[in-house]
Structure formats: structure tokens, C-alpha cells
Image (cartoon, rainbow, N blue to C red; front, side, top):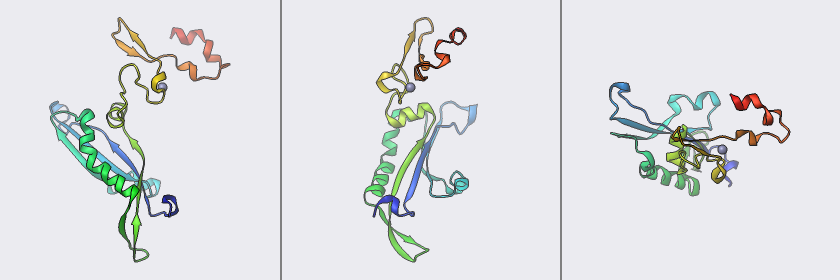
Length: 170
Ligand SMILES: [Zn+2]
């Protein structure tokens, strides 16, 4: 049976971000929880804490950065098994076992964490994951940083903002 045919199959979101459990008192401690959120629930329930599943809690003196993939490996392999094979699960409504499968719909992150989790660098010349290798970037010699301009290229060719001088001055 296809995944979508069975409403009992679970649709998941994965959310992760770092925080400091000691607030501003200590900057040498970091905590990275990784939450798995089921989206089969009604919208007003799926973002409530009783339905969050904390799959990982990564403590350390600093954020795991790109090494987060090492910690995520057991979760990824279980998610792959849930997608490819599924697990036998008891359905209380029918009183029978069935093969439960799961799919990850999306991940929820801020932009730097998205960089760590996706493997796409969200810094430097090609920082935009959507524009990919066509990211419009410019190095500011005196500002000493990369900036991302030319966003009006996404507007229709005849859009009035394309040749709006006051916008350039601002
Ligand atoms: Zn872009």
C-alpha cells in the first residue's frame, strides 16, 4: 500500500536550534535539542509540548556546528528504516497490528542551523540555498564582508520598482 493511502502513517517535522541553559551567565556551555514533531495531529495540537518528541539533546562546551551529523546519525537511520521498511505497530482502534511508516516533511531551523543541517554553507559567496551557484554576491572591501544585492531581478521586467531611483538612494 502506498504511504499516502494509510492515514496512520506519520508525517514528521524536525526542529533544532541551540541555546545556552545558563542564559548570559556563561558563554562556555551549549545545548542543542532536536525535536521530532508529528503533523498528523490537528494544527492546534501538533506544536504543543505534549506532542513533541525530543529525539536528541546534545550538550557541550560549544555548539556542535557541522559535526551535528555525527549525533544525528542514529536518528537518520531510524527515520530511513521507518520510510523504507516500517515497523509493526499496534492499532488500538482496530485491535490489530499494522505496518507503520513515517516520512519527514520538512525541517525547522534558523538560517545558521539550516547551514549545519543541510550541508549548504549559509555564509560567504554562495550563501543562498535557493539561488545556489547563481547567488548574487559582492565583497565590500571597506565593510570587510559579503553582501547580497540585486533582489530586484526577481521582479517582473516591467515592474515600476526596477528603475525607482529613490529606492537605490535609500
Ligand atoms: Zn537567493
